[in-house]
Length: 138
Picture (spheres, one colour):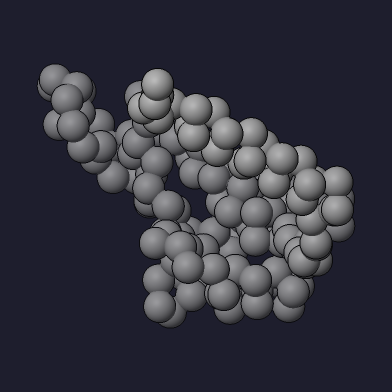
């Protein structure tokens, strides 16, 4: 089952390595004898992803991406190996999709004349209120 990124892009199964490991944390006897957690590894540079995706992924400052360009995802939220594998694949998909989103370039704007006058009017009104709080001379 390939990980579907978009209608044109997907990651085939043979590019994703995963291994079952024992989960951490509480869980009684079950956690000590069942390898239900999943370690998923995906090599970005050796993948068949388009160059755009590879560049964007390698440029990410994400703790899940090693210096060698390998994505490592550990999934241990669920009790079954199948659900953890599906969760790891979904998180890999989210990572690749998030890397592909290009932020719109911000255009610096100037405040309007109306907004400037409203701001200054508010400041002077507040100053008048505070000036009226002083001592009264008789």
